Image 1 (cartoon, one colour):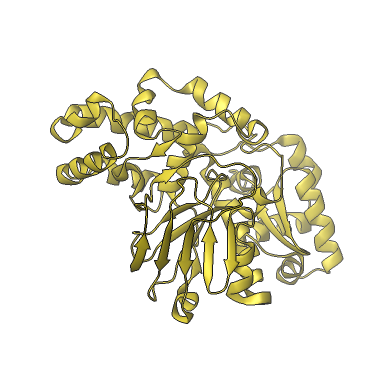
Image 2: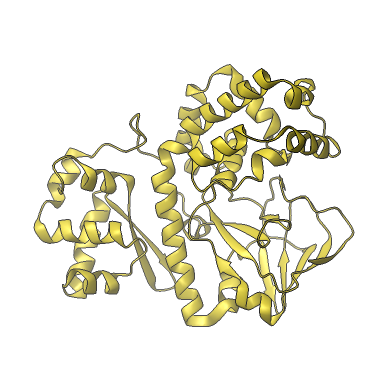
Length: 363
């Protein structure tokens, strides 16, 4: 990838940015081949969600969206969690070996971090130290297995309270976003997708994608046929995160569509059970019992992001009936519906999935 950079790119660097931008320093140049190879990720990225969740825990912003989650999580964390926050600060860089791992699930991510080689540990810490101070103990990590184990145990502890119990909801939100983006692609092509991906921070001026970076990165980047991976995120709702060195192609992280519409609903409002699933709400289940409504819920769970018209076709009912059942399920907290310029995308909530997974089978 050819790049003309007047300031060093920092893929793991992020910070807070407020308001709409006036100046856009990062310019990513697309060729026809780049546009053809640009795609939407098919699910959340555990490394991005964990690192940005750690940042959100150290912030006091977005209290409506994250306040209850932040309070419950911080109340449950033991003091050793400060080790994690020292290497995942709310400002500046996140040490590469914690943020550049590609585990497909939170558990796989944590296992990969535990098995990081000494050489990568040392190189990652030295790279971070060039940009910001590190705690004195961090320099001992490559040569102190017990200290590294303590850090990894603390990271698993943070993930176990901040991320893993909510993973189903994070997957549902990214699935709904993928449905919205797919319809944007179908209706207007890749340029419509790039125009709407994050209007407050990202601007498409063909053939250049201009991105407002919190790090004030001033660069012209030429993708040279690689295209980009567009990665939706639940926790990364501030300035965009761009990883120019990701393999097999650069990554642009953006907030899921639900969080771009000024939504003020709290996230992760339900209290999860110990196994990460949300217990069914008995009163809500009673209000939606019925064969057709159960079929609608099951269909939405099996086809996350389906539109009302698609739902009607899959269940074999009229569109008006599908809309009515979806409204009842939504009011009961068993599904969410995301809207984008006249289109809808239905997804099952963790409560709805728990209802379907209950020992009795179906509600």
